[in-house]
Image (tube, rainbow, N blue to C red; front, side, top):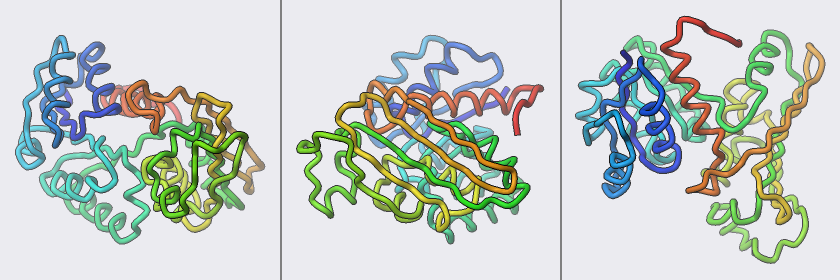
Length: 271
């Protein structure tokens, strides 16, 4: 039985809990936490089989095997190091926090020293298996083009700093183009997938990201193009936004659930 703790009871954390509660004999949701206690109570009322404790991260790590971060990029540095130091494995959903190379190497070191694992789900994109395989040879380029309804970009630092009027956009418009490091900094709540691609592939500086606002679409679309020694592949994922948070995709929650189930499964499929 894998005992897990969930930190962050918003759209992703809640979906993980509800899915595991409904369909898992090998995983126990032992504890949950959110700084907004109303989120915690609302989530606990929706669970039919499991009765997780409301524990802080410091309390949680004394009882669980794995801590799932589903809070925010800013919370990662407060959640992940204490969990690793307590000997807990971790799953990071706000993968954009790992764009900071110093922090990334710090937690990698903690994981090695305390014999822990760090899990990074593929999130709302497809093609990670192919990219990881291709990385055994030389990769020439990785390009991510993310298309979202304008409302899905509301509040992003890049939008605010450049005073972009999202409501005035009437046709498909390129909002941003640059490397993944800058993209994650500029759109922290929107392009965690860029961080995932960068870590699995050729790094934050060499991965190109294009962000497009399109008022005529209702789904978050991620197109990935990878060229290398192996040849070339292109993937396109059309994601339905989370019903409770249009800035994230439903598939992101599903990837976390699939990763947890893979951890406890005797059968491992894919790269």
